[in-house]
Length: 170
Image (cartoon, rainbow, N blue to C red):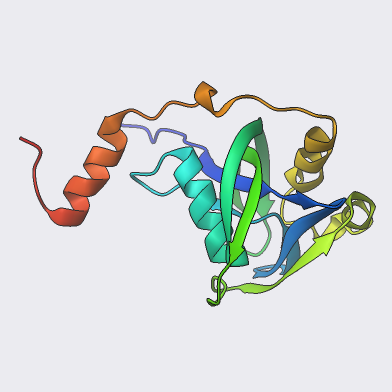
């Protein structure tokens, strides 16, 4: 049986305040990189739940997604992981920044910072993904789709509850 190819699903929070975007600086295998608060979709999560969780973990801020900016694919061949080849499917969300919490940032996150679009563009060699600036540009161009476009069947979250509690659905 051949292995089935699957992209790695990620989410990103595009958060703008007074012309600046909330960015994170993180230690990656190939050095310090810039990204939006972003990360992988976990089993049992809806996409909107994942972006809320990732924003909190990486920025210590609550985040309320209000719109889908876009769905993006990119491919990365990592020199730091012996040429590992990964295709990413990213869902980028616009939303409202909420309360800041007194909590540690995720492992590897060095700091958060607010940057203008031009400042972000000026350091593209440090972007964690080629999608970082594209998502910002799409946000600035006004791209928005309603969250109702996304649907997560109850079987997704029910499976996670079952696994977490060890209780079978009956």
